[in-house]
Length: 267
Length: 248
Image 1 (tube, chains in turn brown, green):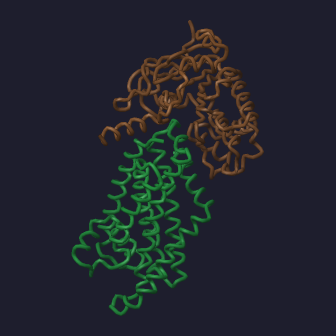
Image 2 (cartoon, one colour):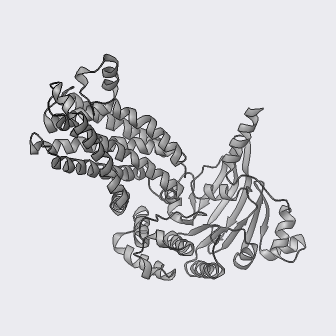
């Protein structure tokens, strides 16, 4: 019997009023797979991640994480994933250790296990000797590393990374992918990430999904996508598939919907 | 319980780390006590009402708790802005526990600020009628703080940014404060103002505090407590309900 996929998305749809942000999207990611979701601004990436991480309810379709239905068994699904958001989400007025401790309490990790686990992870991301520094004194790269350590604290089956390397220098980006790849290998963790750096997706991802205007338009390995489009690099394949026009769409689909409403009411 | 505790602890830790908040917490009430207490004291005495500072201290303590507990809503705005809210919203815990942990933490810091004002007032010559009555006074401050912190969580849940929150804060909190009995006795005000004050739950918190601390009451302690407890229940439900729909 083949193992059930760790992430399973079937006929996922999200509408805001008459605007369809995500339209009948289906895909699956296996245990230990590094899965990239690419797409231009406003394509539906963030909406998809928000639905996968319980922040937004789908209009229709089904979602499971590590066998838990995301809408029906919300708390089980929440325990199954860790996330690094696009924007920082650590408490900057607390120390790194306190941030980790708080996360451990939120996820019900036993008090006796916390210290060793926090130490392991903070050592992994090379922040253990700065554990008692208030996070507001951290650099952008340090904060991102802390968020990764925090996302891993509760042994998730899936790690979501929403543009994890945005604004980081090349060294930090390299280091970050090294941790992530290592963890994925060692713990069989599935990694689901979005990025605008296509060379990153090409180098890291086992498979790549491309979404545009809410539709899934391509899915496969980097080689398969270049072969399919008859191009040499993933970047060329991506531009072939999504076109070269610059998108001005709102990053937040609700904002887009509101803007259209306002425009209509002005008429 | 652990979730509620750790989120409570976060608020308390952050309060003690922000020195500027401590200064602000003491500065404004001190100004009110000095300017109003001494500014109006002579007139109040001449009108045959006794010691105005004594009358004012419970009112200013309630005011401090009101403003400080409302500030918890501003903390939610910061958590939205700086992203920390998302960390709690994707965690496998109920929204109710997140709301209660934060609000109880905010309420605790508000009560601490109210007690600081009490300590200051001792230096200005204020004496409670009986030291034992400070226990029920503390309970009243706590009830007020919990009610207002839950209320501000509810407001903070649907307001998007700090400007919006400040606007609502000004619009709601100042009337609650000025139209309560915090600054003047309700016995001799025009009927319209008295009716407004009687509909304002804040009046009952002030009155209860005044009764326990200096033995003066307008409504009677039993009525005060009933209104206060009802207010806590209604505002906790309001906060919990609104917080369920919060979006990061």
